[in-house]
Amino acid sequence: MPDNGNRYELIEGELYVSKQPGFEHQYACGQLTRFINEWDERHGARGVAVGAPGVIFSDDDNVAPDVVWISRERLAATADEAGHLHAAPELVVEVLSPGEANETRDRQAKLKLYSRRGVREYWVVNWMQRLVEVHRREEGELKLAATLYAEDRLESPLLPGFTCEVAKLFFKPPEPQG
Image (cartoon, rainbow, N blue to C red; front, side):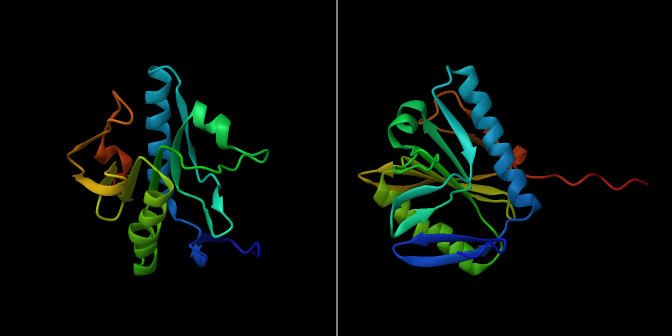
């Protein structure tokens, strides 16, 4: 793929091209990565959260989720020499970018892919509407378990003891001086 600032992903052999994410998108990614890693350090460093790792399930399924949490055990068993993952992390987070095509990719194509590949939880973060959709594995597939709003707390049975105010995931512009 050309090195032109676009992001390229393959899902079921279909090429998805998107522009680099904006500030508020990246802010939410950074906050999630920080909060999950802080939780992990307090609870025995069982895994690690990282942003935009390459996840290569197959030649036809090659994606870069916004944030993942993967146990150290699974990381050791699935990462290649270049650090790409070749199996599903336990948790995958996608932060929506504006546009119908981006939302369709994350809410449909990626949900189906992550469900098929064994992800245990999938969070879709919508910084524009300030909410988080939590999908959990149930009867072999990812199903919507909760929609959380800014006033709610994000918790997960996958990450026992993890809690985060949803509002803290989103950038709050400074108040105008005056």
